[in-house]
Image (tube, rainbow, N blue to C red):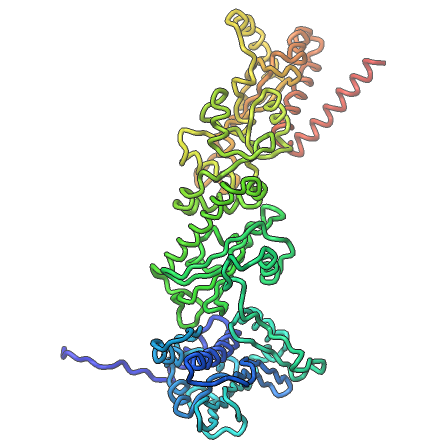
Length: 627
């Protein structure tokens, strides 16, 4: 084979359809690109003014206008920026992927004066116009003295004509789109307003929208721009008021509730990043599934919830982030993954952790009030990000039975003499109310873990904080709930205990049910159900994911604990000796079991029917006895 080298040939008739159809993910991006180009033209003019090359005193206000002429099927994007000469049109429009923005910044980078915020990078944005147009026309007049107005027309994007323009008499550029039949949706005023609001709400140049068919439109003196040229994130945090933060949140996210608190990001080194992250107030735990982080590049909206920049767990928050140096692809829709992006993500995660640390240490009362809303974010973040967990692990708090917020170490220290390295918790305050009362009556404490994420978080903490174990309040009996026993009394109780176990086994007739007898301090409690923590977690996991190919369901390790100190339980021993009342003994045992079950979990439909029928029989028997 002969060695060879050279340049790869690119045929525009082949490459242009690709640019037109596949470069951008959504057709509506055409308006973002053209308006951004207009803003760039104005920013360049401002830069020239700053360095003294052009005088703007007494000139009309710099702005971009979007005009809709629905009757004629036309959209115009008009700016009074830097404009172009005929040679510049040939260079920047007729050459695909030649960026005038890049060339301008390179030319004036060493000039003194305030830098301009230039959006463009790739020289391709203009061609998005052909996604929605059957013909595109440019009329432009350069800022340079003696320049002539130029008109450029193309119907395909590959062939063009140029001639003097008779419609542009002042500095700037007008891009006229003749909308194609398959893009008529963009001739609706509401659609263009929607696009401008989505992509251009915070562009640095005033943007106006003019619907020529609107008979009720205002005079130009009464017009208001559709955007805010200086969004709140550009201000220094010290210059922002709480009211401004709240108003900005309401406007951007259409949320009438006030946010709990916010984090203002403002860094210039080692990368340029500004933004505001809000912790929203939740109406229920399922709200946590719908966060919204808006990503901007030089105040141009790029996308929502880009996972490369925003740590996954922070997608549950709401906020805006503007990073001019983002390594975007040519469509400005996606990121090119690199180490720079990872540094931004790590920085955002650290700032969130720092804010939580500050609140915990300096505003503990507020932090406690926020906890019910923010704990899903924090717990999810801990499980997804090892560094985040290390930063916030000391600020994870739990609400206990006294409605106080305590850390895990505070709970363990308080209860180390009663149940060392064990954390009792409540997952359903109503369903487990009997167990809660039992704990309170015996000066025991537990914490509430009732969020959908808590099952996973418990396992995570057990792995991180070995040998600590979490047990639901109905999973075990603490020694503090039991009556202290002397050795001689224990021997005398064994006979009674065996009799009780036999009575209940025969009455309930469930082979898988374990029955044991304890002497509990609470004499008003006849019985309670215990389900081991391991068995309950396995049940919940299999209910969520199926049997995962195991092929069988592990036995339910349920235990009925009978309280030998209860008068009701003690009376059953004597009642069982009367063989004529065997049916009554059986019915009472079953009723005690069902009452214990109700305090543990809801009865199924069949169990509930039996319970109601039996309750009616017992009441009937009592009423008959009294008569």
